Image (cartoon, rainbow, N blue to C red; front, side, top):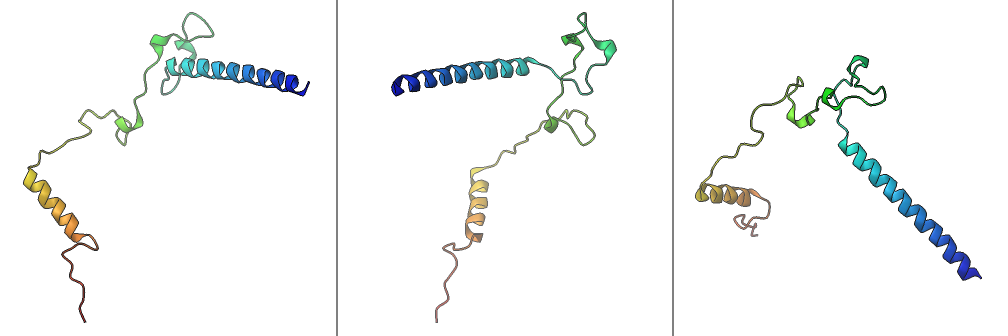
Length: 111
């Protein structure tokens, strides 16, 4: 009898968990499709339905890292890489290696 009670209880818990998972997936997918504007729509910008604003009225907000200090979009490359010769790279790595503590170029004190 106790086995049957456990089976029913865990079946109910499993159905509740799957239902919660499906609701969460639907909420996440609905939120990912939503577009946000910086100031939000004004009452005069609403579409035909009083409950749902028109999607064409929304302005997309860029990521904060794509904006400068004043909030204007940056129109320059974000990553500029210099070309470097192999010898230059090796020289820089040697300097870093030799300046680190415990490098083989340091001579221990002999008494």
